[in-house]
Image (cartoon, rainbow, N blue to C red; front, side, top):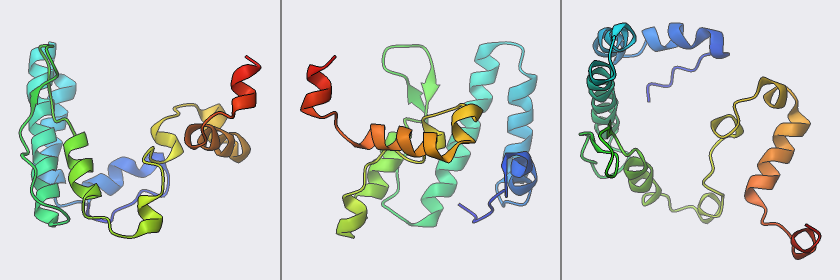
Amino acid sequence: MDRRYPPYSKWTGSAFARTPQAPALTPVLTATLAATDWHTREHHLACAYETVAAAHNQLGLCDPVDPTTRPYHDRPFQVLHAERFAGALTTRVTDPAILALPTIGAVDQFIDSTDVLSRPELTRAATRAMISPPSENSASSQ
């Protein structure tokens, strides 16, 4: 949101510390880590989610989205349902080339494997597999 990008994951904390949200989020995230039960942890995480959601709304990239957390379906957990924000952003995209792209995100959003992520040929293959429907021949050979 603030165009602060860590050069690699080791620097994530340093980049985060330089964002305008860091003073508000650092104590909440610290409390999250210190929580000894899930209810307290969830409370602090919900505060963090809502802080980030409110900051997103301030960007004016799309119509404001309610920044409050809500139950996760019929389970007793509070979540942001961030897909609401993705949906609101998507409605603002007008470039046909961008609209034609798959909505899977970057490969490191759906693969958490250093072995795969450190090998470009594997990340490309995984990405192709996610965006290309299986061919009729491959389905019949299984």
